[in-house]
Length: 212
View 1 (cartoon, one colour):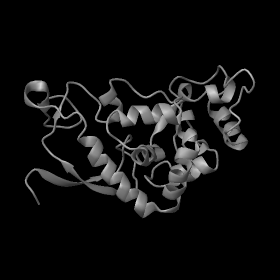
View 2 (tube, rainbow, N blue to C red):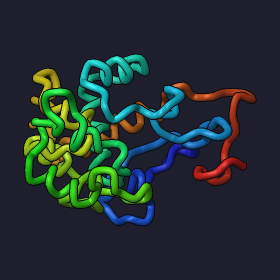
View 3 (spheres, rainbow, N blue to C red):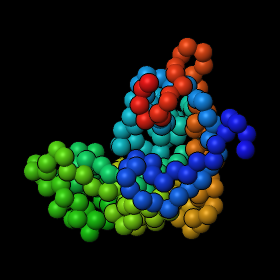
View 4 (cartoon, one colour):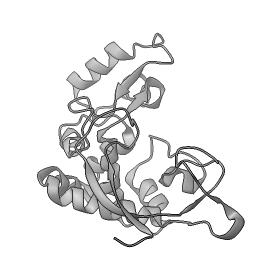
């Protein structure tokens, strides 16, 4: 193995204590990091992506970093694990728009379940809901199957199925875990090369999770 590359197993993207089906990819070592910054696409834009974006807005954000539409949908599969606070999706339950208080694109049973976790005006600020309620501890293609069943948690997630320009990619990923896993690994490597810091712009961290 090359001295500047390492084969890493990434068992979880957002919740390191969770177990998930491992995905493997080669990742560059000795990358400089800012101080501090999150190691993900959101940090490379300078602020987190709002969960209310539509496909066109998402595509604009990803393409500005050189990532394709297919890579955007593939990387969105990271929402197969992790959790969200109620505030990130409660608008879909109670104040979607002037015509529909509840987002009509959301499965009614799923919406009813979410309302038990996040009651109107009564949810605890610390309450969280899994991004994937079916297999929350596994990094797999269940995320895409949830979208087909109208059980995406965020507007930005469900829009991938609602928009014809990305729906076919959702369908392909949902039907082939192995192909999605290979694409996901390749896209993670691509994402890792975005805006690499050089010289004294950053630091080589002794521990990737914290500033030296």
